[in-house]
Image (cartoon, rainbow, N blue to C red; front, side, top):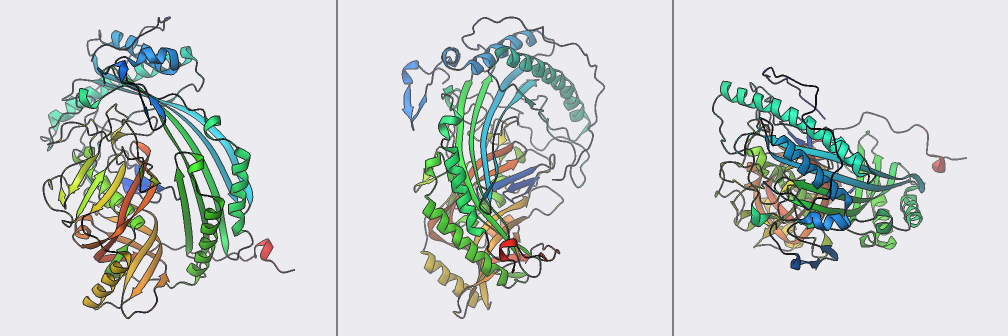
Length: 640
């Protein structure tokens, strides 16, 4: 990961070693608050211009305010208590949330009397528990548990129109320079000790207040010495009452959620043992990660939430090398909201044995030279394709960053895709056609209700994914302000779904590919069956391009010969040109579940798409290792 550091012009500011907040005192019970680059998708790197941070989607191939208490209800098996004052519920059910709310009220009251008072403060505490198991060639190599808590204090001075988070513009250049305000998260106590948590909150709030005052002065100075900004929208949008709310989900105990640990360890041993003794298999792992993330959020606007993000991922991965040194990996991943959602042993073992056969075929497969011509992207490959070349470019905050390419900023109500295609993001969907979707949630990380957003309708671009950072023409959030624990939320993707009104069968799509090859006088086209991820560059000056990383690619011959497995290619291009070349879609959706990394950390997402026929794609040679194959045979293959 490349980081570009450039110091901003700073106006001298006085610092005090004294705290602006009084020492902690015993607090009585409180009943609530009153008052107001580079991206990567498991291999997918999105070049984040602002701070050169990765935005990536890792394939799980590794894997309301004002509501009445009478509105209690059961939702998907979890009790969601929606109430006007969540602190009352928290007093009885969640000591952590009560402590956050009480300390926030105390510190807000004190800081409100300062000459430069904050207009907004929020606390975001992420409690993350993971159980991780790894087996290699039939033996366990890792089995452990981790538990961390990360505290983020978002404190803003100024007002909604202009505050300390505003971008400080530098002098441009290849990487732009300057940037938006970052947030330094801190580790918090993992024990439910109110005094220890209050101490951490007091310290971090005081630090955040001092840093916000200093940076706000820099923001005002920067605006006086730079040209007028292209986007004059506000830095923060007021909380829309209709889109906000208070949410409480009971805590989830990892020991109850993920049981029979020894049985799962034995399963992983069995899965990875399939590769033991196989010739030319140099890495083989079966990995399982069970995750329970509890997110606490409270703000001076009266929002108070405690919600859970729970899932389990399993991945089978193996790698061989061709005689020319090229490394050839394969992955198979599984995802569920509960351990019992994962497939049976029979299914996973069959998949693993098929991987072993495909790896042997890959070693013998020919290398594809650079090529332009027609191709089919499978549903999984198309999902990654849309996530990378489109999804990151329509995240709202990128449209006001002067270092971003802003590919679609001026494309509102213009056709960018064929008229038979639409694209939606729907975080409210937990499953599609029986398959779990990893990018689902009820409220985003800024306290806004999740909602379905149609970004392309009948080929016409309609809008952006929005957090509470407004942009020109879009002044409020649509429930896509997301972040990993300890990161400031920005606009991020959720469950991406490519919808089509016109489609054909997979067999018909293949026939259309062959006809397109003949039309272009090409001996063959390509079929991209599986990808491991990709990356995209969205900034200015550097090429605004993408690179999707295939691991299973076939030649489809125009003369009717059998499809041929090939290796050694990357799919490259630019977004607008590639969109114009989509011809047709199949009638079957495929899912890609993963975690996507960007400046607000790693967040779970999914992408669902049919297979697509593209009139012309371009491939380039894949990077290749120069290391020879092992000299010594593996022990089980050594002759006596």
